Length: 381
Image (tube, rainbow, N blue to C red; front, side, top):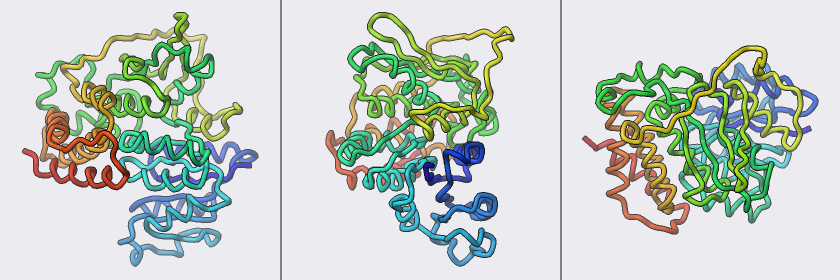
């Protein structure tokens, strides 16, 4: 029986994770949950699942939160210290890092310091501090198992061969709601347009990232550090059906892909039960039905964010932290109506060009630049 802590349990990944846990009571048990501001939803979750701990990470809500709304069997904690206590608890075997954005770094870091398995859905952790995170995992004999559907697919496909036999990995992208549009056609899209994803049901930040293809840029950077790849071993292809979640090409020309309907419960379950597979509540492909699989190269002119991802993966150092923070700030401004859609990539480009690059930064320096980049984008016009 694995004891699981879910960081960000009220988000899309978190709620799907709780469904997986509920379906596998003989294998998985919920030890703790966290949320930033959605404490009422968190309280509802505790009354259903009765975890030992619940954490409201926004310390300012301490006086507002009604403790009686939570399960009587659940200890309520607050702030970063509460997250650290949950992630370091000896009873916890697996930490699911499902917090969106750079805010997910701290919990992941603490879990790795304690030598735990981290099921990582928070790509920003590796974008911001990939080399440091992977080195910490190596030193502490901790495990990082990907939850993102693309990286889970690569993780599964890589088991068909050895690292030295890999020619390249190819990340698939749905293309988002604006696939096929030119840069000129994207100049006046609205937040409502960008939030209408054709395949996946995700939170607003990730959905906007899909529309700009910044999500794929971040996944390119994540893949480099997570799998120890060279720059020339990573590629992206647009696949609107979202059935092939990514694939690996080996040196002999064999291509191993992972296919399934777009349902995040499958990669979540695989990360939690690895190395075992078991019956899943995730949707299954119906091979009795006719369907087509379409692939096309991405348009880097219309979606310059993806080009930034390849550049940042190549440069490394402080670039990942700056790109991620600048993008988070730019997306927030776009959703608030103070920045145009096409200006998201331009603001990120400006922040990258203006920052003082360091090839081997410390975690402290990365966090400082995260703050700096957000301020730069807030002032950018």
